[in-house]
Image (cartoon, rainbow, N blue to C red):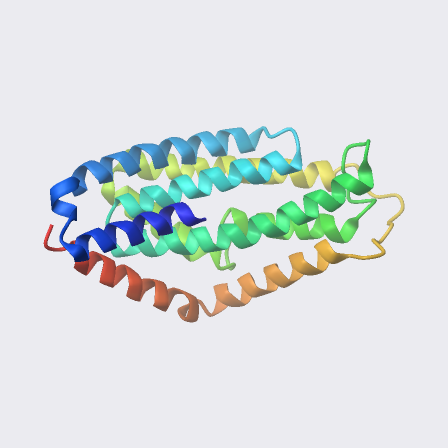
Length: 236
């Protein structure tokens, strides 16, 4: 989560101090972030589409989303930076919910493959947080992903196509997890005695749903930061 944010803060400090032009060229930084981000976005999504277990699915999805965020930052545009930071925050929240749910599912299913029958609330939390991970509307992750992919097309058509392909691969990975958890059917539901993962997942999903319906309170501060950042880079 901190990689794109740290980059922005570091560059802004150097710019305001007057040191940036002497030690780095913005164009080279753009190319570097664009290349690393594109490889991470597509590569992480490809690995997520065939992840053998729930935890790896989450980790690979996070790598892909952070790569897409780096591409958004590399555009050095308002929509790109807004989308990147929004995506990073949503990814952190949804990944936390998914990892907590995956841990519960694996503990209750061990040594068998995790299924929804042993911990249905945790399975539901994993699925709904997966919706947020891929930026499905009307959740809060959708505006950020939309901004990044839109500006990526304007930056370079190949980049925009690659980010869309990464999103489709992430959808495949999350759907595979849904089928693995619920596909065999549930003959007998056994509700968890302490459904911590389920409750936290529902809370995260609810917050992201409210944020998606009323996004201004979330996006306006990020937009203000993006404006200040671009103003600091303008002399370069």
